[in-house]
Figure (tube, rainbow, N blue to C red):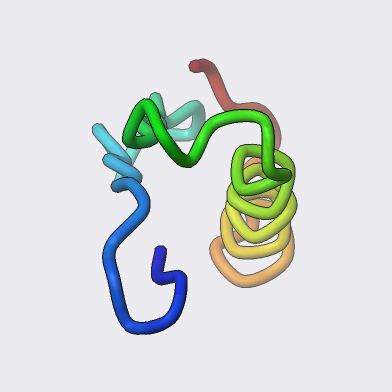
Amino acid sequence: MLENGDRVGIIFIHDISDTIPLFDIRLHANCRGKGYGVMALRWLQEYLFEVKGKIRIEG
C-alpha cells in the first residue's frame, strides 16, 4: 500500500491455495487511523472472494 509513493503497510496472504487462507495486515504507526486498514480489507475481500473464489478467510 502506498501514500504519495511511500509504503504505508504490507499485506501477507498465507495458505492461498487452501479453501480458507490466512491474512496479516500491518500498517506503519504514523499511518493508522487514516482509513488504510479499511481500504486494505476491501481490496483483500474482493481479491480473495471474487478473484480467487475463496469461501472464508481468517486474519
